[in-house]
Length: 464
Image: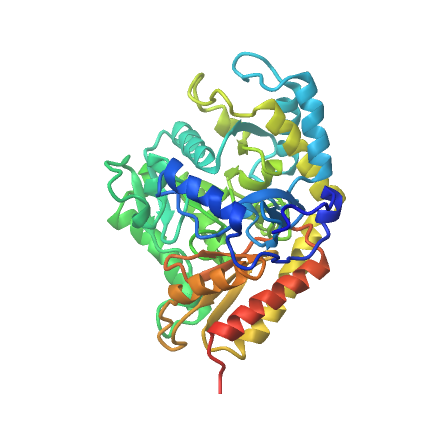
């Protein structure tokens, strides 16, 4: 046991993964994990034998001195990496002045500056925009629904299969996977679910074009079978489903949703909690939509907004946000001044370091390699995504597409034991998600790909 290395934090940022203990967890990590098992609820599940000591960029070092390449990034929180120096400096400067000013009591310039920046960069329908802040993705979605209901004076919301919107009572009900809600009801009413356009698992014998038409028709049928269109406040969807398996919405489907909303006075609301801030090659997936003439009415985002600090944002055009009454939105910590300072620095880093372009580079390099493996191993069923947000779906049989969650769990453990942290996703837990920090170096990418390939070679079946 050598303990934590003497590397400086700047040096750590450029290191490669390395396991120095005989096994994982190491002695110090094992002691902390034992304390964890006694101190916190067991429902806070963690399968990784890692107790973090420090981190920089895309590299994590544990308390025993093992180094790991992080391809999870706090589940999409760390697009600019761990402890970016410019964010650290911005936070220090803000802390020297004050920590907190509740926006309902005092006006913090940082809150206003960040709202102005979001109004400039967030692609929602309309010329004048307004932004307000909350703490988490679930809070942002709750507030987005509030805004839509207040503006339209309608009660109902349409969501989709495979969706994940949070763990509050409302967002748990909006979330598709019912394993997340066992024993927690009753839930708020007014939530209705239709099929999301998953082209890999589309109806048998449909072309992609036919499948898109089918999924559009499912929304229209909902107005007959679930709720009248005149009672729908919002249609809410993730442009690339996160927990649902990194499934991108086809642009023709999005255009149709936009048209349906326009024809029926419904708010189109995009959940960009996981897709925002450069992850997909633009600041938001809705930036692609804006270019295609189908920008949303309301956009909710969080995760990578503040480089690791808790913050979320709700953005809509002026007339929509002004439709909600005084005192109906806001909260004690929403738009905390330190988090706002971190967010302003984070956005500047994304712009200055061209991280949207870097996302495209990383995603393309990763996809090319995985598609090569797909030709070699029968268990790799699909590779999909947008920019640096890529999902790899593992299956037992290419004809039946039976999910292989046990294989994915084994891949996760094989990789972490060799210094690479990956995570599963998907309705069946059979998708490996790629959410690596966009500041990852080319050398680190190659090291991670080598570890991942070795795991696949050890656990998957080669095609004849």
